[in-house]
Image: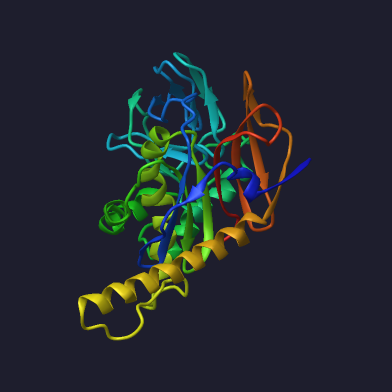
Length: 322
């Protein structure tokens, strides 16, 4: 068992200016590209409940993101995976520990490229804890509880009930947050608390992963956090004074930006000191290792170059309970 900190996981990155929308805030992480991996844009299909076949047609290996899922329009059982997976270039692999996320719908997903989501934060730690267990129905009770917590109508383990009810709000998160040059990740806050730490190997990979993360994974919790309140989180920086001239307005904006930079620095320092335990690697592909990391507050996975923790290429870590 190895201990590591969030600061070690984010080594080599710097932070950009914080973006805010409602109860959600995003601190961009900037870094250099490692083009070892293709973006997570692959073909997936099913021919049995609880199993997903991933086909990587790219010239580089790729990573199936932790908590990835596929909700399709066809009459087929939607599926997700609890943990991530490494897929070599021009090859496929079967993930037979996947889970159904649409309880009463039958049918198999036709193998092709399907839009990917990442499971809501409220479901991810449970799904991750069962990543090695077989059982297509293992997440149904958790999905039903999640739906009830956000007033999504319907019975059973149907994630699409939530997705249909809040489609407009989820789409708005994608439009309102902005990717910036050199971005390879983000620290995500909900209601002023750090909820997620995400790092991709390259800007190309991050651009592909960003929408699945912000729309459902973190957007779901932002929706829940906004229920019954219109107050902004304490980490939002308010403008001071009543400026009247352009010079005064510029001064007020500069002051707000300075205070916001201070908030970001404090948050990054605080989350950076969090310690996580890394067990034995879940799997490896040549020199790259996929490892699950966890503490009482956070849980997720990292991909490293080499069995140590010095070179983190991918990380997806979020609150262990919300």
